[in-house]
Length: 188
Image 1 (cartoon, rainbow, N blue to C red):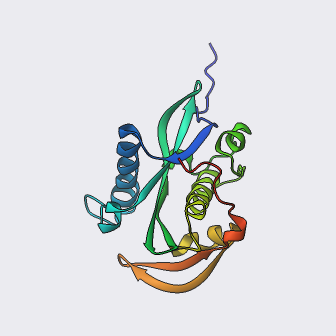
Image 2 (image 1 turned 180 degrees about the vertical axis):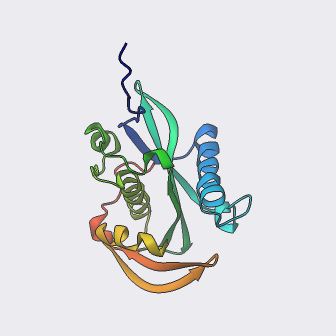
Image 3 (image 1 turned 30 degrees about the vertical axis):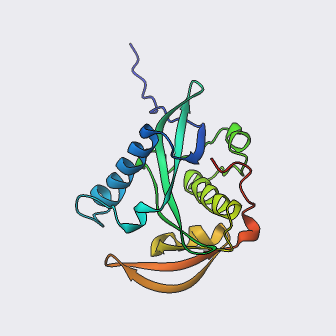
């Protein structure tokens, strides 16, 4: 008998959308807790803050057998003054951070570009966040990005504005080039 190693299955089909169901919202908050509390230790037990009261939660769900399954990524957006939107709490589940293949159907299903390199889900979440805000009246989209992720955002057409400290960590305040993020065809 020959025993062969096999790779762990990793879905390659995803949907990026506003979290509207109880399951999506539960997965949204659970993944945030796992990333920002358990993995990174930025917060103790919970990462909820005042922004959560008025935010729009966005999730990336895996698609298995044509059905939505697991929340694989999250981001939230909120309008802090008329036309000025912020993105925050961007995170991708550990198993999906080094994804090397994304189904071509992702671009068609989501009506947005499909990213085929490392960081594909993070880039897709960023696109969904900015394009959604752009469709509902955004004239400036900002984010405070952990320092180590600055280059990733720059490759996605963001410009650094200033360095700040948040939760004891070095962050860079950045602005998206809205010309690179067409208003979402579907906001839901």
